[in-house]
Length: 235
Ligand code: 13P
Image (cartoon, rainbow, N blue to C red; front, side, top):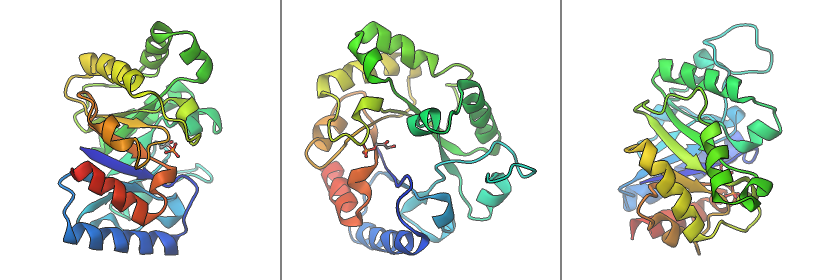
């Protein structure tokens, strides 16, 4: 089971340090028995090797070791923080930062050469969802173009775009249908769900047979809330 907190553009270095300190204390006292990951903003990255229960990851990177990529962060910069896991393909980067499937595939291939753990995000917009399950399946498989699904450090997060940050999660039976479809092809790759996960719906989502965890935004921003979600997963 993977429980991952995506901070997006929230928290500072100072508040991230306090968050991780509280999270580690909580996990010291009640080990999660699952894979806990936190993705702070790049400016708030802390040395991943200093935390024993939590994996710290990068929300973004440029697919190069270093070089002339103004404003970007490459492997040399992430290595300094011992970061070994990354998010790729998040819908906010696809939509707001105009990351194309081709560029995303480049990032994926680069991350794989670095041996990083990857949470690869996919998800359909509302109009596709409204067109029915077949349309959703076709859209989601399109987001695997150029992606090596046999990469052994891969987890896939299904995050329907219309469910992200809206407070309206997808219906559990719809999540089940999509995750079952993905599991059929992705076999042993862990599958996460993301999109308005909270303390009320986490349990029913992670109980689904094809669900191996959750990628959580808003409900994980407060460390006490994230600990509560971990407690729910422990049950
Ligand atoms: P919310 O949990 O805020 O809907 O965000 C989900 C998400 O985008 C995680 O990557």
